[in-house]
Image (tube, rainbow, N blue to C red; front, side, top):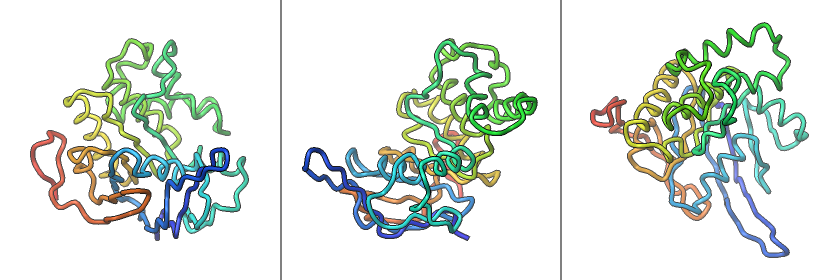
Length: 239
């Protein structure tokens, strides 16, 4: 069963009567457990597509099915609830609260849901353990390195046990060593069955995925498996 299916997706921005097409005739599916890279140059539409797939924005036309449900008719409140339960996000800029502890940053999505508060501690601990950051739980986020901040951001994305994680240029602000550590964590999560959608303009980062969607001028111009996958060291290849 497809987790995501989009058909003839369109996104048009209107700025004082001037229309700009960001996405045009985008059609593809993503199955449960896939690791997809969406790759293309700046302005190709990849971040716009991720925002629509992640329920942060709406398409101007076409259809979007999530778990075989057409979300076009969902209200904003319904989309927000669905987003909090089904989707986790990792962004290039980390988006952590700077003078707040690592534990509290990871806990934040739980405060917007109906989980019993007494369960939060266990969920946060499990998420931090998954990214090897348990030892930093009481640190303030502004005391962390860039790589550690991104690992905390991944833990925050995991804490609600989402079906899919969207990572938008997750290594863009990191040195090469920290970037490889982050990609190793995403590969590990995918090996455990988590669906990952990675947005990047870097070929070396995209090569950690299993399949790549190539974008240009708002359209999908290629959809192919990655045959020479990079491993956590960035040197060897995985099958």
